[in-house]
Image (cartoon, rainbow, N blue to C red):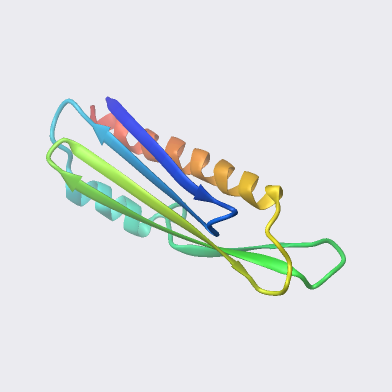
Length: 117
């Protein structure tokens, strides 16, 4: 399986993008992969909040993901949008959390693709 992963954006842009393209040796069962992704609690579009200890200040991160399949090429795109709920700046902790979440999602996605080959 060949793969190419591109990350862009970050705290300064208030949005992070991830595109992961996988080329497998044979065509992919698009219906099966799409069913798994649609019903998966792991890949669902979701909002997460990180809070500052002892305060009501928080940062909200919205995550959305989508899969595109054509022949033997599978593309996963993930977008993280950082929303400030109150007047605080996102921190490196928020950036680290997003990077960690991307890493974990890619591991789970690659696990889904592995038995197909």
